[in-house]
Length: 265
Image (tube, rainbow, N blue to C red; front, side, top):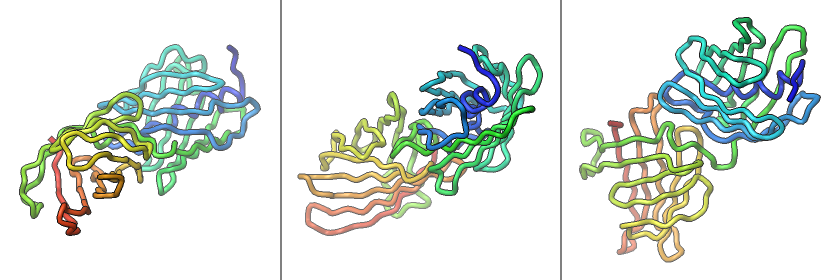
């Protein structure tokens, strides 16, 4: 497979631009191409996963890429890529990133990306010497989010900030592609796709998960085909606090609203 000029810039470089140094990476998830300034039909799927100090980037379509880069401000080797073999990541702010790509120690391109305020659109500008800037626009897959950032982990109820002092302990884990395993007073395995999934050890029957933004998820619980409870989970910017606001109906028909605070362990 051969690459040259703007084709290489558009098809290859956009994938790295989705990286950002930081524990809570708002670009984590699945992205679909909206538009591109390219002379070659570009890849149409981009998936970003975060783990510890690294980010994995997988691109599928006309071009396939799959590599992991460290987010430590230094060059990271990314072998088996035809256009570059090292990347250096620099965080500008929460929603903007600059990535320098190198081949055999020389800079081949600079990537600048910008995440929209609602975190649903990613605009990537690729700059390389001797070629016109190339711009690609990606949109977040509907309701899709990698479950390992920032919700994954073990959470303990903060009794100093909660009226209902129940001592709850929650565990949230990634489960395959865009799936999540939740365990606490009840448990389930579900995807962020708005479809109903069965609950275990719960008075409710099913749960539906919807991604609102990188730090917010809504959960809708049904019992006997009726909405019985709505939860909103919000993780703080530093990823250490989680707030649960729940509204539901008791067996007696009484409506209740409660807010619980959790700390990551």
